[in-house]
Image 1 (cartoon, rainbow, N blue to C red):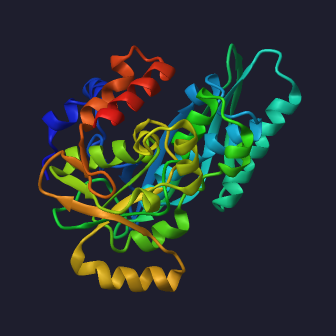
Image 2 (image 1 turned 60 degrees about the vertical axis):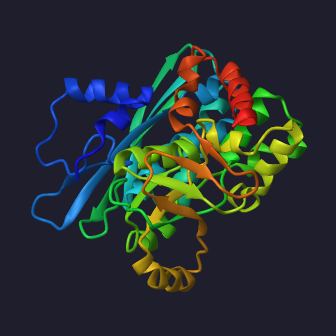
Length: 351
Ligand SMILES: [Mg+2]
């Protein structure tokens, strides 16, 4: 399938990645096109398995004080990569991590990050294989995930068609709630940091991979995930489930306390690492039966439409969102996250 390059180019982040792509040679055997999957996919010669690898960094979240405890920093530092492996249906082999610690930071800070990395890896049934530590002005943690997936079970972002149903592995908006909690200095009782421990959805992905036509994680929150799938596949999305169902109760409470539209928490660019995926209607009965057997209850949130890249929320107060405007807003306000959130709140008020 030919990817819709013009639609992708409307998004600043895609333009940056495409610029790098134009400067670097692509491996001739690489299975995924640029932007086409959450992890890079290379067949392992002589086997029926594919190597999946991905890398991600936590820096802005640390600098803005989203996470108070080093355990959370370590947990999130692992989850950013593990979640991308889950989104392609891979089983993790492990991850390697590069941790930059501020000069003079106490040993407990380093130990806390290590404990968080360890806890997230153990929750995913995997290990830190090795890595590197450095010192610098601010804390930065980068992890690269390594996994494998059978070639018949690999998921990418490409393949959904109008009429496919859209699901999430769980309610959304907690990533947005974490950023709002820090930026608006909400009382801890409203949403404690310890309540935010997103787990890469490996268990669910083994079921999803048998049925999904496309899959992406919500590392940049729901609206960016759907907008990107729309641009890659030449489709749009109608989210018809009520926001009371789509948005996690803690995130709804945060939106209410701030008197902002809950869609703000699905639109800002810090996600919660659920999987969003599409299933063709012909496969729904078998999918329902498989999820029931696995004891996993996916959230049906909407349907794929033919109108690209139109993103509509139909329940509650129906509206059509401008995905490009939302996703480019951080750049448009000069990169200041507080100004971005204020602009987003205003934009959703008028949507
Ligand atoms: Mg991702």
